[in-house]
Image (cartoon, rainbow, N blue to C red; front, side, top):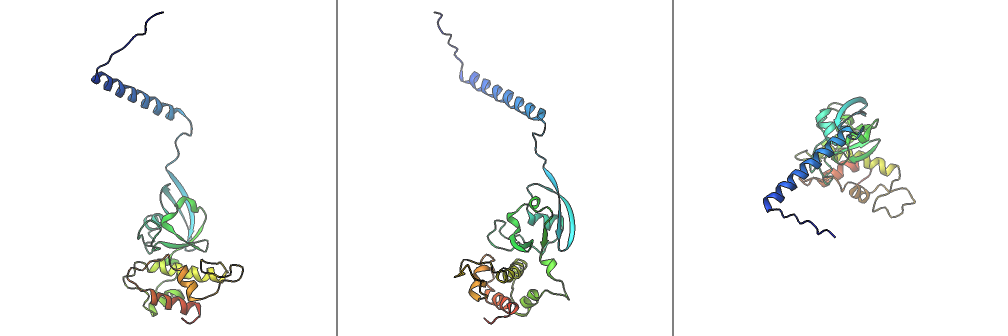
Length: 212
């Protein structure tokens, strides 16, 4: 029986052979990928959405958040980027009538959706009732969180009207009550670092037609 052959390599020779093997393997993998049809996903997509009752068609990187699409592509800078992690609510907009944190969703996920931002609620001289109430009750200080607060407040009243329960709704089989406790719970995801919460509540309560 033939004796096995032993190859002895010095440390420098071993390192060189490892590098050569890695380069050759990587090059072969790249070549295989390039030859495989459909192996690479497109980096950009065209998205058509209705924003504030106006249709827009934009081309975005597939990783672009809805927030960045609104701000950077459509120049709707009323929607603010606060934490960019879905924790502060400054970027709240309404999609198909439901409020969402626009920093946590991709623009490509909203093909054909109807989106309302703070610019779509009202404008100087023709304010939405919630905007007017925030002004009346001084529901803002620095104002950075205000667009998200207002969009969320409008959606909150619609949620209660639709009977959608919250974590504090005692009977989820009945219509959700319009109470300050319900409003506070539902607005808890919108942070005001200036601490204008009591004034914000006064504004929402006035629009809701109830007394605090």
